[in-house]
Length: 243
Ligand code: SAH
Image (cartoon, rainbow, N blue to C red):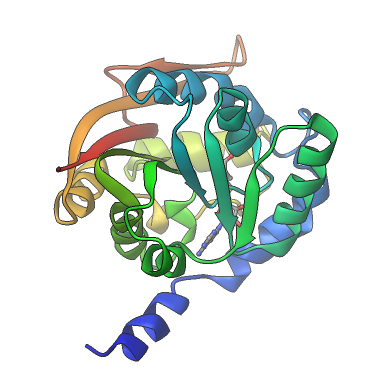
């Protein structure tokens, strides 16, 4: 395949309707009681888990699909040198403004994972790609780009939603229609990704699965927690690039 064809294909790994949803809500990104409340609530959990597996101080990190920068800023707060990328313009603007207020420095750029991977292969110690794969047309291509971005021996973290009847019930019916945690239409069931599929995409791109964690939500206590055993709905995967 020629470079031009590959670039053309990479440029197409975006669903404009998906970006439009995040554009429309961007101004509320840092409101902890907004549509983004779940991201605020899960942030300390995922941050601690990432920092435990790949201590962030001094690391070069790229956060793929960073949105308004909730995780990107938190990682920079722990001393990482963070680049946040996304294809939606407004969330990036919001992220930049928030950084000015908080004084936490992150470099934000509107670029696809595939394009930054072609430009800066192996440039990062850590890659994070959270709650994003279920919004792209070709998640395998995004995983490939993440594998290309990380240096040999570096760590890549993903999170997404499993695909099974329970996940449909909890992540769509429960979260969007019963508990109103997320706006209706946030997620499409057919885009959910089974852990076996994500492990497969990782392995075929030289990323060795290290650890998987489920993330469960208790509607009574309204609390999220990480779980070693229950990956039936939301889950996170840590992988390491050989090297
Ligand atoms: N990762 C962040 C935000 C998750 S919301 C967090 O967990 O806190 C999903 C983000 O993915 C949105 O900001 C959306 O604009 C972005 N996104 C969707 N499709 C994308 C694509 N093809 N390339 C880059 N970012 C994309």
